[in-house]
Length: 87
Length: 123
Image 1 (cartoon, rainbow over the protein chains, first blue to last red):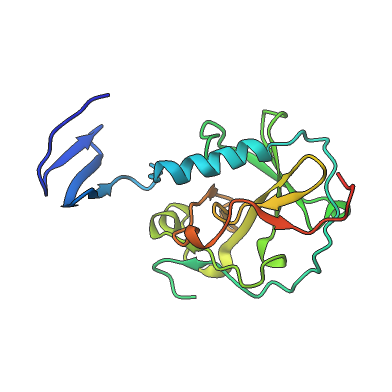
Image 2: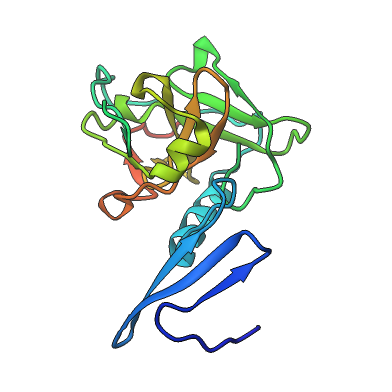
């Protein structure tokens, strides 16, 4: 692993297009600012791994049979919240 | 289109078989071993409110809430129990067909294994 020393407000650049900036250091917490193109997904590792594990577990054989859902079908009323767009 | 852990697979087919409703299938194009069961989450959790980060909204080219189709991956466990991942929904732009698995900003409020009520002994 490459290890670099940086001070607050200093940055590193990856591949000329991903900027990682040390915004603030508060005790054991480091605030990091990341600027990356929208096709570069950025995730907290533990959240990424949790969802990745769940995806692996959810992988099914195309011929698998489906469970019978008992939950009454609700009329979908809720909607996602799109950041930056008024619903 | 991309799922976490399956980044190399970009093309999927969304298949809805009337006999299997409300479940649908997300099948990787060109790799028959990769398939996921998906479900409209709002049928199960009417107050589900996934908060889609701005970077994902931009990436998907969404300009209107009605253009966003939300589907969540279902895990069918041994013994027939089933859960749904509410933390990482798949969001698809209905107009372009472009989609991705989004890590929602309010993921801490939701589980990756939200239990579904299913009849005993199924699956």
